[in-house]
Length: 149
Image 1 (spheres, rainbow, N blue to C red):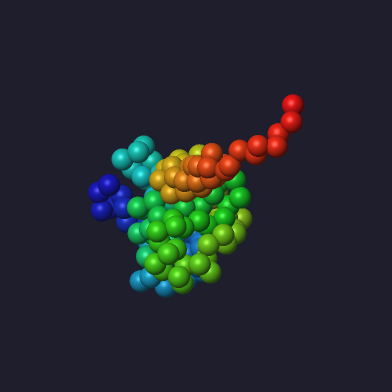
Image 2 (tube, rainbow, N blue to C red; image 1 turned 90 degrees about the vertical axis):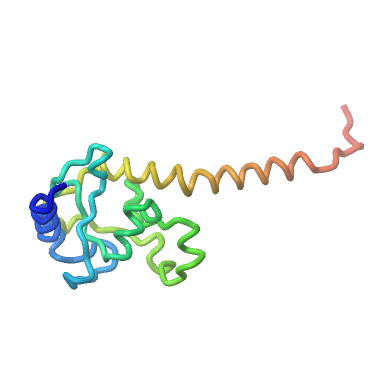
């Protein structure tokens, strides 16, 4: 995106979010950035409905799929890798995001696209590992010799 387009997108998103990070409530212009929900390279358009205002560090995590918002519950989710290192983010994990204050609603399908990328990178492998451990533990159980037919 050219810088005039980016500047316009940023200002539109900032206005739509009332200059406030949707997750943390931070308002400082120097500490917030407009995030594309669905990246441009994936077909996301530079439209206010494809943007949210995030604290700069959270935006970096969002851009790299270490933070997302569950489109069904509207709760904030961080990757296990990030939560294991940055304990301060634990207070934001699972926080309900209130998008009702936005002037224009965000595109939920774009949010679902972002969530699916996040889920497949972080949540799905954790679930698979937990299931595999459960299966392995089940298979290692001794077979009872007092089964009667």
